[in-house]
Image (cartoon, rainbow, N blue to C red):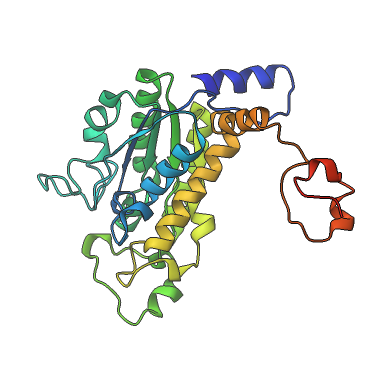
Length: 290
């Protein structure tokens, strides 16, 4: 509950500082989501967005991180999704609502990542029903994992959401129950997920706005992101974490202290010495004065 408590304290005192959602390093990151979170269509495993995010965290935080990726291709938020197929083991079924206790809460995560909305919107799941299930999952995760940082990744953009982009495709895949076109549902989801994140003290990442129209990031199947798209998603999520959680800055601050780094001895190039020396006197530049 660290993020929620700090946010409330800042509001009470009229502070305008950004909320710090987590100051302690993350040791267990658990992800639930759909096929893109699973990493489908990424040729190199390290480019999967979940792995990209994890590796970025490992590079900059203090200590190790273990990742449990429980994303499942074709997964939906609940059995109420029109595309849900009962008994379709580890595809649409079990849905997130049916499995979150086993696949998220039982792992006692430090970072709980949920990434839903693409499949549900593509099969016409109403916003009210979708968010009812999502809200249940997130509130229960918050209650039972009170110290976890929760991150809600908004839905990805997809050519199906733009009728013109869809019609322009040379080959239009038949997604059967997941073939609904138009962006009315997905944009409603995006706003509702953002509101839910604010309510529970979670970090929200608006992927839709960043990815909208960037069809070159998606593979020939018109649904799944290729390596570069996967990498972009992971980096975008990492950027949101770094901008909202202080734990990722601890290692940098320690290096700054140990190496006595300052504006006088870091950055730049040895070019333009008559300019550089105004910031970096010869005795601190690490190079012989001219």
